Image 1 (tube, rainbow, N blue to C red):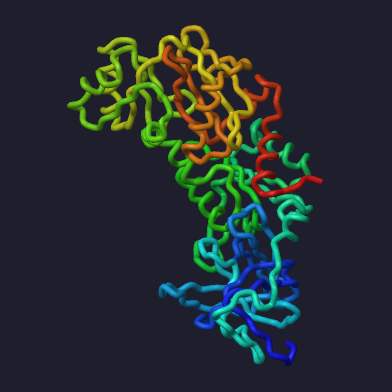
Image 2 (cartoon, rainbow, N blue to C red):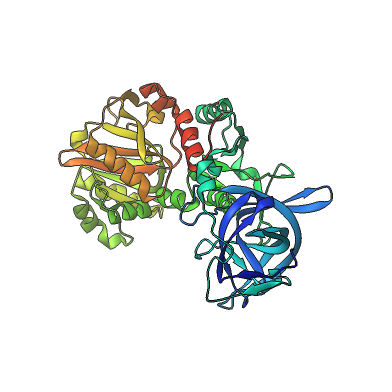
Length: 456
């Protein structure tokens, strides 16, 4: 550092040139011992017998799409006590700090400062000899700007391929194979991972996911294809990837909520999503009233864990409804009783929602003598044009669970469309054949958009 005195105000524009950060507003706080830099997705890498931290910085407050990938040597781990008394163990890096025309080496801790006004804090350890603080002034060493980030947006200059995992127990299914080929065709590194063969190291310092005897590299994105039989373990694996900072197309909480039909219907109702009249009760004494509340026969009795049309029964008379309800209760099964939409005529609509847009829709018609239109049960599909009301309803239903990739099933009732369920692992074969669209490619386009990736 230059020997001449340097005066700093309580806030200054700084640069971290070795981290490719040309401009950051920093708070100068002599009450704090250590300096801190906003960092997310921290990953440790071993190179040449040295440990480096690879991390992401969002340098512009409120503009999370602007990101800079940084790497610096780790020189220590320290327990830092915040101003409110909370303790946090942080990695410490060494890099250059530039303020005005002066540059010197500093030690900086990495911490998530997303909720704080300044992306960087300069503590007293970083204030070397010759630095004078004037707490009554700001920007004594001149102002910089965030223009450098927008003239060449960091988030769109990424040239390396994305590292993407498809979580699936069925690598040879149409959906898995199509996703794999579509992602690789766009130049990304994509692999299929069997969800049940993942195992995890759970700790605060270095959470990890292992698979087939190896520690998995950091993934940029995860595409979950979690079957209903492994929902609990599958969502636990997704939570681990979320902890590691991966973008999960469908998050663990959204998958869990959409899978439990009672929870899902309650969330849809809370968010004003129209659906068939539905009733639920636990006590056998409430059977008669439960049937009445659902709207009398014919009715649909649906297991909470049903999938692909299994565990769904149509009962055409009140007596039959009482018998089915009693049988399910005898099996100690949880179920819903739902009004049957007769005017739908055995046809439902599957809307495929990616991001905040319906990218494809098809009508599914049941076989003769069958009320369930699921393709797995012999239903046939064809392309259908949906109304603006149906399109808006599908997007709203998907948003209810925070899903970026979902199949929303609905019926056309006399008083408007009704959502039946939201599927967090929709199949691709039926919708692609019916619409002629490459749905898998559209999903990767959305992942690229979410991550600020610019294809070459």
